Picture 1: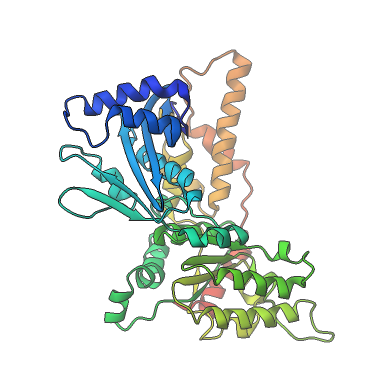
Picture 2 (picture 1 turned 45 degrees about the horizontal axis):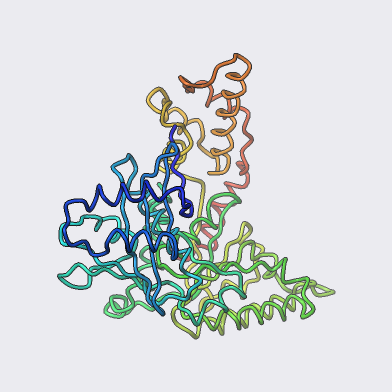
Length: 427
């Protein structure tokens, strides 16, 4: 199976870049950027390439002028999966140029050039009839240092689209979180107040972190994950370190702030003597209230044990929604299996049988079974002296791997989760 690699430009790539430029611009007497300008930017500015089977199939070249970034050449050869590769190229170029503190990344296209679909899918907008496209950078120059201090990052786009299946959960998050935050004017017309804090709960491994990252990707906001276990080692103590972290986050215009396994710092208070985390829970309750006072940010917390949280933590006015995230449905399991089965073997696999056999498994469980089947097939090929040229996995091999996979979530845990939905969910 051919794999596409996106990497930085090397001098050895120059000849292939020239060929691709000539292929795409050879008939244009007045290209927006000349071949000489493209070559100069490849060598002196910023360039990334996509290769498949050691052949260059795509390139994105950029240069910066003050706070403005310009793409001087973006081209793709006609290869399968070009849309996905195009997005990866543009993401890689943006990451390469992001430390420069750019405010916008723009591109000018000649009238006959047609990479519009790839560009608009990556957030670029057509600004006028001259086909000038630009997109606002998710993090502005003044925010770069603050984002680094809190360990935040801008996630690749399309993570939302990559969450296959789980349609009910996605529709719910789209309506409750994404639309009110990304289209506040529309929310105002319906009297909807954009959420400030949301709790996700469910068994371990069901994708709560994945959904939090997908929301950040969908909004095109920086993603900041707060790790209480790391903050506990600071001289200020956990409560003080939490406050200092949230104060630094406050300098960002936009952010999706994520705390996983929040039950560790928001467990039920009380008892004699008081629990060791009671002071931390008190501080976190104050921080959530203060966090809610500003627009352009959202706090997403996740827990495997929602019933262990302090009652005040889930009270109305602190968390707008308490949303259950359960095991993957049939559509999601089909998509997960399709992702991990090699394309050469797909036609001979009864994916529906695997979907049925993997009911009750988490995405991580299914990934483990798929990789186990592949690894076993590779080991057999090596023992037989087979180079894998005609490698084909079978449904039986995947079912055997499933039989050796222990479910992360027990039936009792599923039963508890369903009860928790009735008790705690707030949609």
